[in-house]
Length: 117
Image (cartoon, rainbow, N blue to C red):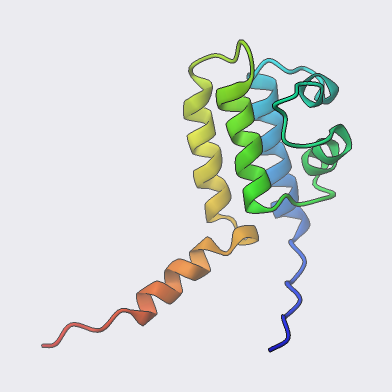
């Protein structure tokens, strides 16, 4: 069966994901993208991070989660409170249409058997 081409992610969603990543980067103590990208633990290249933060490119869910984990758990000197921000970032991202999690939850609800009366 041929794969369907996924619909383009709308600009508003792309910018929101970028904003989430930019805010986490800054709270992790990286004022500039290149400072984060220079770290060996950073899961993305400088240009990729720029593209995500501008909303020009939407990260896969895996890439998004890797960046959140890097900023919250692997960035040297990141404040402990960033973990709360990271949880919020993941919850927000999963609710956006980019990752289709809400569609999956709707399907699960439809697949469950109706209770017998």
